[in-house]
Amino acid sequence: FTGKEKNVRFRIAKPDDYTRFFGGEDGVKAYLKELFGEIPTDENAGKYIYYPAYATAETEKAIAEAVKSGCIEGIYAENYSGAEFAKKYRTKLIFGTGANLTNVAATREMLQTEGLTAIVLSKEISAAEQQKIMRTAQKIAPGVAVSALDSGDIKTMDLCYCPFGKTCGACDKREFYTLTDEAGRAFPVRRYKDGPGECRFEIFNCANLVSGAPEGATPLIDCTCERDVAGTIALCGDEEEQKNKFKNYTYGHAKNSVL
Image 1 (spheres, helix red, strand yellow):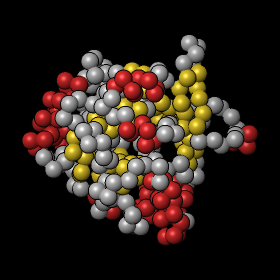
Image 2 (image 1 turned 90 degrees about the horizontal axis):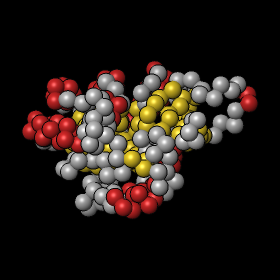
Image 3 (image 1 turned 30 degrees about the vertical axis):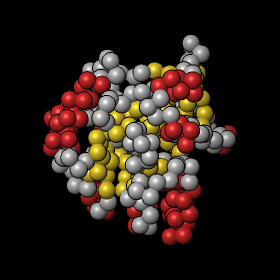
Image 4 (image 1 turned 45 degrees about the vertical axis):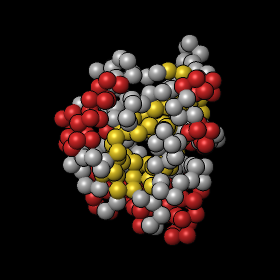
């Protein structure tokens, strides 16, 4: 996503059910159309499927069906296994925030990855640290976009088990839930089905990020829990309007790194 012109550069869709990629060619294309339907269209924007942090062999097979359909450009991966997948299936790759690009040395190594189109810097380092890495990356691989999480949802945890401790028979199997702590803070929880059909979960921060990307980086906007995707994207670069929309917000680690 390029904030200045506000046109989408990469579109990343997160499937709620990876088993649907086993529905044959027509089923795959229909599901991809459904997934990307809410994301603003730009003819030059590449379509990428989210490759989850805990990807099983069956989940990889499911994503491979999406790649084989010819309807997507590549995958957005949180770890290095995504690089192996991209190499195996000759598809393009974006390294996400989970790749933990926190220093120049790690970034140099990642930039050697075959098929790489973009990297997203760690959300746990300061804007100053991000800019240092960004300058180095742009010299080493000028054709690779350097991005940083700018606004929207902040994922804090991936879970392989159910956080509610319920039996599957009693579950209403919604896509979104809420966990509340002792202070009354509400943390969105997203449920999805992996390749084998097992439930996996993502937990997001109680506050949304505003204006988190440093100058010069391609802003990444996480709309996982957002109903108004187009409206959220349109606010990129407008800090005050982002605050009005999210109400409960944070600047993340722009000023203070956690490292």
